[in-house]
Amino acid sequence: MAAEVKEKNTIVEIHGYKKYFNEGKKNEVQAVKDVSFNIYEGETFGLVGESGSGKSTTGRSLIKLGDITGGQILYKGKDISKISGRKQLLDFRKSMQMIFQDPYASLNPRITVKDIVGGALKVHGLYKDSKKRTERVYELLEAVGLSKEFANRYPKEFSGGQCQRVGIARALAVEPDFIIADEAISALDVSIQAQVVNLLKDLKKENNLTYLFIAHDLSMVKYISDRIGVMNSGRMLEVAEADELYQAPLHPYTESLLSAIPTPDPENERTRVRTEYDPEYHNYKDLTKVGLHEIAPEHFIYCHEDEIELYQKKRERLMREGQKYA
Ligand SMILES: Nc1ncnc2c1ncn2[C@@H]1O[C@H](COP(=O)(O)OP(=O)(O)OP(=O)(O)O)[C@@H](O)[C@H]1O
Ligand SMILES: [Mg+2]
Image 1 (tube, rainbow, N blue to C red):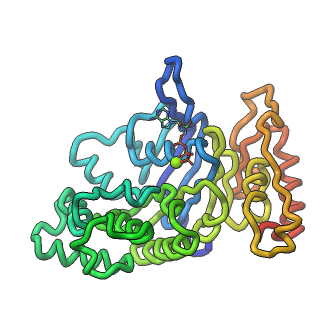
Image 2 (cartoon, rainbow, N blue to C red):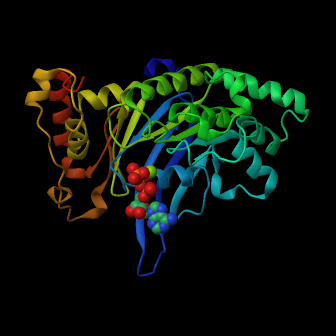
Image 3 (cartoon, rainbow, N blue to C red):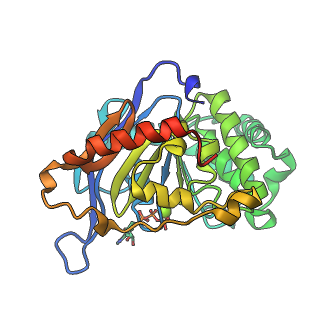
């Protein structure tokens, strides 16, 4: 999978990013405390973690919805907090699109698919001629596996999977370079999830896209991600290439997420042991030495400096033992 990414050009760089809501007030929420990672051009970066870990907040900050509390987010080498003015913002919005979790809620129920998808073209001044615009809408619908008959219908007439395809067509309409899919398949039936994941994979190839694929568990991300980042309580705890993460999950939180995935083999399923993650386990006293450390090439763990060697040994052992979470 990772071999598809030939040259590693960085498209997104996130350094020490923090996002607090209601800062300084009684009801302050430290949604993101310390997150750093890069996304390479052409890859799919999977971002996982349980509910409330700060994944959507990270995605929303990346697409520049609201200010951040600390750190820096660069897109194509440019600090996004410096993007200003209508033209720059419009260019940025054209380049980066988002697909949302709830396919029904994310589409306006009162307008037809033609206007939903065509509306995105209008906003960006693409295909100004209405006939050409309609042709383009048909093309986009076809690209996501919907016939042009869908164009004059309303979202409520569709299944969840079909709605999500419309959402994808709308995101694709402006020919973006980067798409954030925030739990884009979570609301769909498992069989439909696989179809939409395959569609996203095909579209990525055809349109040279880069994805940030957000999910709350590690089951489906495996099939789409080149690299995966694991978040918990507003922190990035582990980042690794997908194959490596499943073979050598090092952080106890990653292990707990993997142990939660049911296995198709009944024999393995019978003996599967779910581990629970207890953050108290670390009990870090000297926080100055705690951070995201690269313990092997492209494999990062949030840990204390003193733990690096332990994690390195654990990795060597797991790499030798072979795939546990296939
Ligand atoms: N606008 C807001 N105001 C106050 N708190 C917020 C706001 N948005 C998010 N939060 C809080 O920030 C934390 C992180 O939320 P976020 O939505 O990023 O989590 P998530 O990882 O996407 O979870 P989920 O898997 O449920 O989507 C949560 O405690 C949430 O309640
Ligand atoms: Mg979310």
